[in-house]
Length: 202
Image (cartoon, rainbow, N blue to C red; front, side, top):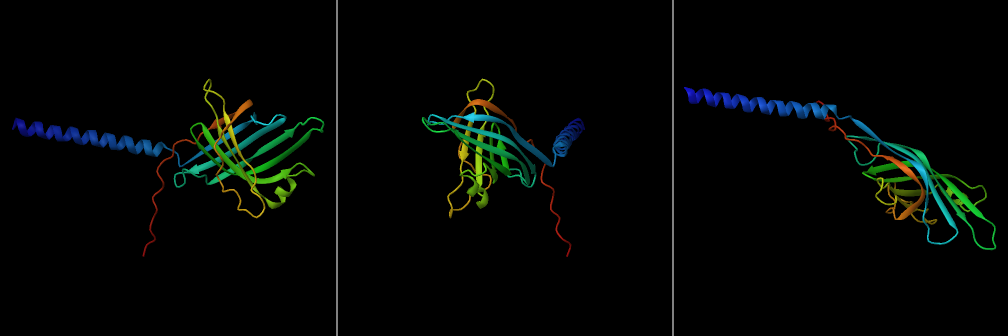
């Protein structure tokens, strides 16, 4: 009788533990949101090996992710702007800029990738043709933690006429160190499970 009672108590204790764990997991899953957002903002000058070149990237990009699409955004918006100034001995200063309408922002830890369509450029400048062709440009960022070395930028220019556009959400590795300025990156947060898909009744 004592053995039977002990065994019953053990089974009840195991059932209670299992129920508590299951309930806790369910509560945690329910607490995770169905959508999450990411963003990157800031402006910086990037290193360029040729003397006299001043290249700066200014960005204000945002994206929304869902449990059904946790890696690629369901919505992205904002702009990024590329400025390129050139000083050469004996020649007047040259400056060109282009403004890009964001169509993708992806993030992961201290990194982000942004792409978009070039929509405005220096009037009369060499990038006006790129605006007419509605080329896609991309930029990647590594935002270094405080005291962990320089942040970095990777910039993908427009593809030549007749070649396919740069793929959405793709950009080269961030290899050029930031030499002035910086960025604030908000990585996307955790997501709850994707909603169950209901089958149409027959």
